[in-house]
Length: 593
Image (tube, rainbow, N blue to C red; front, side, top):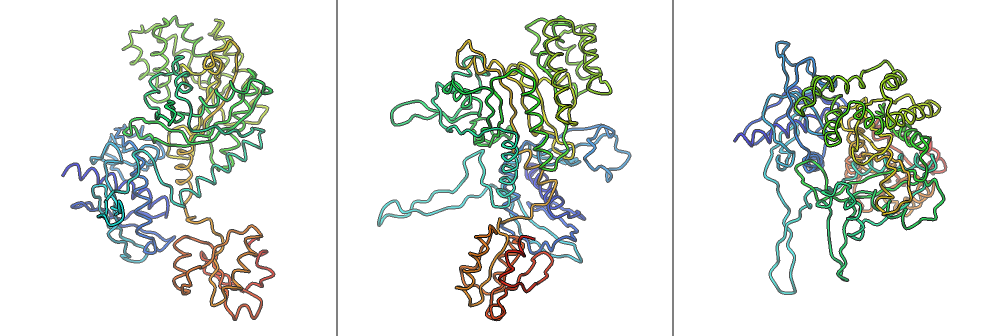
């Protein structure tokens, strides 16, 4: 019974998020009983009884199927993240428990929850009904995950064989409303890549297994090979699905040694990881990576960050770019006389400075048997200053070793270039330790300022050694790049604005005994680049309007004999309800306004 209650509570959090963010509804009541969830909301933007039950179920279950981890954290009242509304929590509560459905939603709640959304099962709508003026009641239930049974005949005359339609674990389908926004984001990113002079390349998802293994055998996190999907082809050759986009790109550079440098490319594609689903990761997901190879100039890193800043501005996000240099961290640990064998562990603790604060870092370093004097020496390098230049000057006064001096020079140059690019969103954060064994120079992460999502939306840095190491070559291939977290960006954009588009169609034509003439008008619109669909089932006006409304198609065009006599059509704005009589000769102009 306790497990069922936890499933219901977690499902309720997802429902609350979707209703408040997608429809601007305000929750007025909630009850959990038996295996059911009842939520009452006030909504003035939309008649929620017109929602498709099947579609709403699908969207809720789409979140559940993402296998998102659910974390429960107790915060002191004054430490609760500012984006979380705790106004309804009694002032007497000094500690508040926050439930975090990773990369989706954070809400205060003192009840039990599942550890992963996959444990919720399957959500089903029982009813959506109006309870009063602008008040709607959603009643649903959670059940053990269901499957659709399909009968297939094994051979003629034999009894049907039953099998179950299920998604593979850790993968997803995308309905139109999800795919439309994904494609919009991807087009925006690609357009910006190309405006900045990055050329597209494409590599196969299949690679020779020894190609995939070579990178990791060289010391690049060999455990990752355990997450590589492996297969054998009919020629008995061992193959694998690409784990990320770095390996194929390294191979591409190695097989094209005569490319003129610097080479600016972008690579977009699906990658595959057979990792533990309980961590909330997908087994198939998209990466979008722009890289510059062939120069160690900090201008290349500035170009990557200017590109990233432009992309997020186009998507409507206010961002912070956290920036550091791996050589500075190495120089700081050398300055503090940290032995080589402890440096990895110390860096891990330093990287948590922003999250757990100075006292938390001191505690961790004490547990690693670092003495107080050495801890003071380390933390003196991370004193927060009023601006980036002051932070850099603080380190210049401290770091005198060769590695630290190289890092200071690189950071100074990079900050200068970013100023010239007009990038104002950068914060120099000397504690940032992204990619401990991977990066050789500047490293950066991009965070969204106006979102409840705390995961980085993009991250990367300079990796001057990895390509040469991978190719077992003495030749150096200095490189820098960044990877965009498409899933994080999509979730943030869905929070930022309502998902209203369920179809890419701009105009839906309803022929009223005028099929031939309607097809001619449909073709005029399509040839003008206006996304147009029309009724191909001969349904009545009411059914067609229901269809257009279900897909949130913005305009419906009625073409009847009376309209054609006037060489016109009737266009209905499905949002405002306004109808206009428009001459056929002016119909393209109408949609281009």
